[in-house]
Image 1 (tube, rainbow, N blue to C red):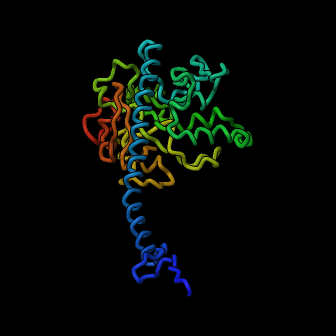
Image 2 (cartoon, rainbow, N blue to C red):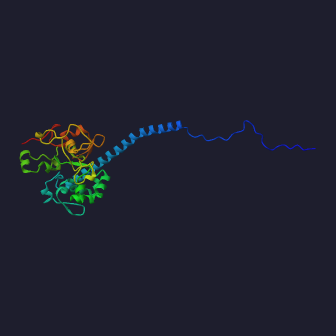
Image 3 (cartoon, helix red, strand yellow):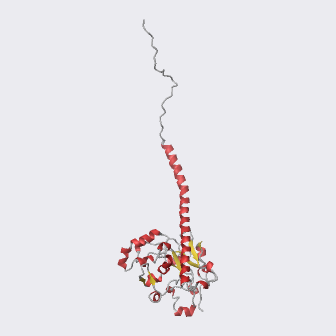
Length: 306
């Protein structure tokens, strides 16, 4: 008699759970995801670029106020006389000595430009003059290249501060013969010489965002966003307008185009005023001579012979 043994194996049924396989993205789904990411990136990039631009502007505004503090300290140390804009060579080579951070005397153009003359009031830290730290490093790194032209780091670093000085009407400009006896006899002194002379200090520009053309003695630096001086749209009335009609950010000659002014902050320039505060101005605002000269009484003002 054979025994019946019950099977212990579980019966297979049509409803038993099956192992689920992981399904990969289809090509269409992948393309959809890429498209969505691209749209999001395109939306974010302008915001990020705007944030960076705003940061640069805020940083330069802060730097301009520090520069005005140094400008005021210079005047305090010199009986109220402001920093000469671009003084005659006979001054800096004679009774008005200028020194570098090592105590070595500077002569000629290095001393005529304002950076080394204001540097002691910034503890010789040129980061207070250069918003573009990379440019400052490039100038330092290029020292060996300058020797072939008979210049050095001290010459080049005095060329490209982020903010240029309004030399024509603040401190005077020897390039325009403003210190010459004949000029003074014919036109008088057209520039502010002392802090207390300014009748409208809250509206008188002292420094402004600047740009340079290619310098033959430092061609490796290209066209830096910075220059030691800015020049007005009008000077003597007989000369008429000196700037081009419209601003060109790529102008080969920024001096002719905009008096070395740079509208690098989304169509505006940082402006430091005589009373110490800073703001921004657009092309129209910078074309107004009442911003440049304390004596100006209209936008197209120019001085006349006495």
